[in-house]
Length: 294
Length: 294
Image 1 (cartoon, each protein chain N blue to C red):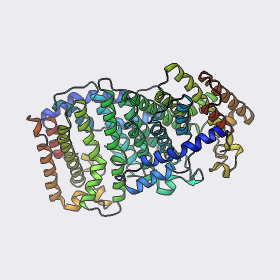
Image 2: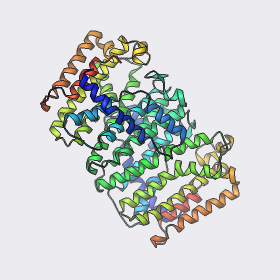
Image 3: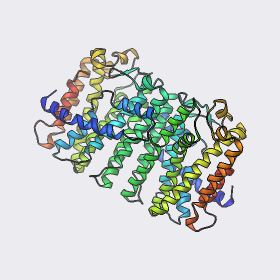
Image 4: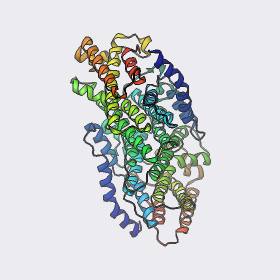
């Protein structure tokens, strides 16, 4: 990872962790439920989504006292979706990031409820922004709910489940990922841009960047599932292959999947040209997504 | 049911049904997911929550073009919670309102996702109000997320699950119900009052009404579980008793539970006195909650 990005992450992670945990602090929550929510929020996520929100503001030379809250709201949505996706009736995963999944620790009922509660908390936290107009707050909530609902993330998980038992075309596979992973990454960049007061034309450019890193992110995940070790990845490798799931490598072969990854990476970087700066954090993020080992 | 309330319901139900189904109409939703969402939304609910929102506005002599959307947002939250509560890992119910539960029709994975998608849709629909200030929209979303999250409905379901395996005190039982059912009913009345532009002092009075009908509603549910037939109720009766769950009748005995019901009913009606009108819809609602057979 480039040292500039590394420094940015090191500088911002403590505030993200602090904000996430302060959002989870409320004395009226039943103890087991709260413990289960805290467990998954603190289960070692890389905080890519919150960092993307903050990096967007930084690259745009803007600040907002609400940036952290918006950044953490996305992480809460992401965390709830992981808890539900890991359930036995869904992907049935016992481990995530090297730790037992929520339902392995707390049982399925609590896991369902912890996911639900984090889901609600994400929207609740966005109703309390202090440095953002009510109009912009609503706009951000609309974008987050578009990105995470039936025609976004949840829809993508549905398509992903349906795709497990059949061969998908490349177009169908892309649709799964654009919905399941891409929409939320796109939201991160868009939300940062809204907080920064960017005009619509430039927001569209940034969305193009985000769309491309979203797909690059997924292709890289698919490649790592084949080339990485369980230890590096913190979850079982080769699970896609053993379940005959359609992936970029299975549809295109590993070398062509790698080329496709490079293409998306390049388009993402080119989409940032309008910012007229060298060494943008968002550009370094695109590099990191492609180069990461887990 | 009083004929005035009956007429009000008959007049408003078609608009509620229409709005709910228009909120579910989006061509980008995967077909099975959409079908599962529509199934539960149309599974024969009495629409008590949306009707309460509309009745509050009517009793306050106010109108809002957004009343239906707000009314339906609560119903979406209520519906998502029923789908998740019915799951095998939660209450494990096969039937609700005389129909197979969502997971019996679509499988558990789709049921989890349909619940999640309805949850997001509720908040999404509230970001698009057209006749309400952005500030009031945010206020309504904040109240809805407070009422439905970890220190509201979801927290109540958690307490309810924990209470299944032990004896609860009356105070603990009340806390379960205030959170699990009461908070959302209270939201309905409060949201109607916000849309009507009511001042805070009067909103507090209305919330007192709602708090009391919420508990009355639950005591009546517990009583019906003992005194009703499976046919009348559309779900298995006596399930509370067979699982040794704490209920008002089990803690107080059936006659005292009935007296408690009457007390809450009376306080609810008295809380409406400030409106200075006879035959309020909210008063008739309180009567209906106490008199209903299912």
